[in-house]
Image (cartoon, rainbow, N blue to C red; front, side, top):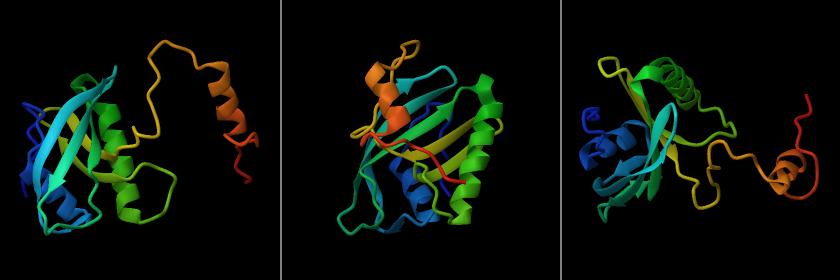
Length: 154
């Protein structure tokens, strides 16, 4: 299987093809090109946006966009814990209200984990750091979009 290049943090079509095949998302075909750019540089990790093109014969669950999360080496303990969590969720086949995880690769040498997530940037957004949510955002978090409380009945 192709390995992720932690040196230059570049996603290759060969590597992404192998990850998507291994995890049951790409049944047939291959990734032919990827447009990669940094989307959100955060304190503990960097988030990269990947726009993906597949060969015409490709079939399966073929995301056209993926977010790649790469923890910074000084936060390797957090990256490993997150990778273990999402890895166990992927293997369990339990339906949970989480982002789809397309694959994970860990490097003990670089103290980094690469996690591929469903990209929801068309419908969701990241607030700026050190900026409080607006009153409307607080209301949405508490009451939900339809004015009903969001809670889980246990």
